[in-house]
Image 1 (cartoon, rainbow, N blue to C red):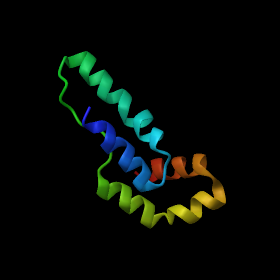
Image 2: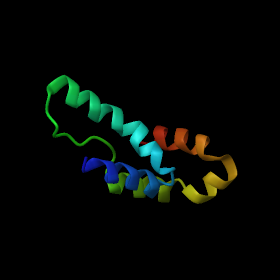
Image 3: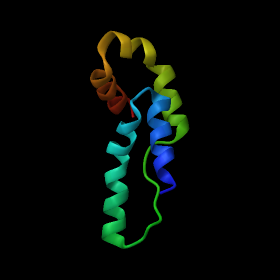
Length: 79
């Protein structure tokens, strides 16, 4: 449960809508819990990865010009 705010914050840091953080990192957390029975795991990007992606890729300008779907694909390729 402590990862949920982190997942949303990192998605918003990189310039995505907050729900994308849950959609991309939430399922691995649930799968881990089901497969291992352990509630302790943290999967997803780090804040430095999110900040680097946004600054290196000129996130706001790219979002305005190409839209969020294209930006998601670009960041996924970058990561």
